[in-house]
Length: 344
Ligand SMILES: Nc1nc2c(ncn2[C@@H]2O[C@H](COP(=O)(O)OP(=O)(O)OP(=O)(O)O)[C@@H](O)[C@H]2O)c(=O)[nH]1
Ligand SMILES: [Mg+2]
Image (cartoon, rainbow, N blue to C red; front, top):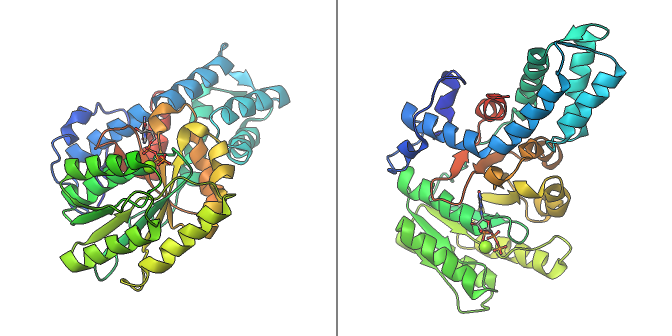
């Protein structure tokens, strides 16, 4: 079901088709992505990572004002400092520094060697399994979406629902489980209208668990294939809200025994390393199965994906690269590292 994944076969330097080529909503049905779709989506992700690429590219070029640099302790610590500016974290930055040290110590290194090392090490670190969305053997598949306030949950749900409903052709029911704010229900209702899918809403301040339950029931009753449930933003320290999340999990397991099949944690890439500590508790309490890394387009710190993978031990399944309905891409490690470095 990869509409971005077909990039693998492409040369990173090959000019890509305009990203608008995917705007027509043409089908990228499971696994049958056309090259146009994949290339367009790669272009979109590449645009999203532009700020990170610029910062990294400028920083690395700064290191090489003269032709080649002697690899000594001073150079290695300068390199390390530049790398951590992308929020990739000390572990990955140290790994790249050590790779350069092992191969070039006391010799001259060229900028291309450093870029190649960054690319190779990052590509390895980004390898992950189970990045595909898991669909239940027997419909409906129930997807719960959680995260801290403002991380991009509702918008990501809109984009995800569009992908599943209109591109994969699997009918979706949305559940407006954020009942605290009237605006949250409206926001999701607008998305449902754009996508052309059903939505279940509760009365203002209704129990979110009952809305979640009704959503799953509706999916069962109407034969919808996927139910996606929105939740209010919360912090792991808000114990009552965290236990509410447990209740939601519990009740949706009644109409559909093994639900939820996916619990997606939405992280905001612009909040950098903070996103990690803020949302850490979610993965345990809510039993998260994967991550949507939203707002990569607004961030110069796309490197944050590396510590996220390391610490959460969860696959990043999707990345958000804008506010538009098409601005969600399936995660692909090779394409992601290419997108980080193609211009660097
Ligand atoms: N640039 C950009 N903006 C995004 C992306 N995803 C979400 N946003 C914006 O981020 C803001 C918050 O998004 P929401 O989807 O409302 O976030 P939320 O997690 O549902 O927020 P709460 O329900 O208040 O917790 C909105 O202005 C979105 O348009 C993205 O991938 N890129
Ligand atoms: Mg929301």
